[in-house]
Image (cartoon, rainbow, N blue to C red; front, top):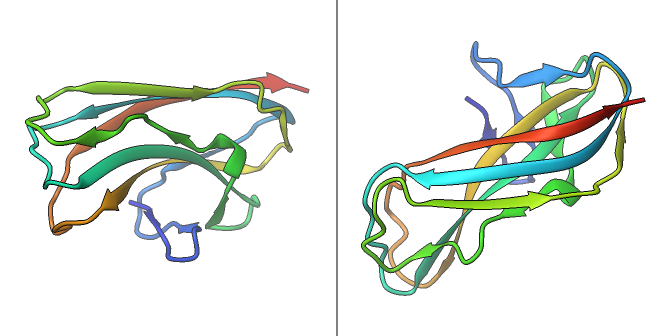
Length: 138
């Protein structure tokens, strides 16, 4: 499992592989995300949870991935209040990105949570992310 570091990068650890390598030079055209709540939640008053997905890239010989800011997808309006029923879905997309990627680039698509507002933050929230990217071969 990879986690988001304080400096905004992702470093792989353990024996899981959460990435793929591009087999050809490509242009990243679009990125899509759907996020679902995995349980029924009632969020603390004043707290909004916004799941987001972002593409990260690394050199072929690196396990340190940096974010590609133009690919960040944040669902709006997010989740707040409640109860939010299990399997409540929200979606987002970014199109016409036009990012050039070279063959061998390692790609990670990471899902995270942004939590804003005031109130207790010591809660566990369960979401699952699905999505995809559209690549155009060069």
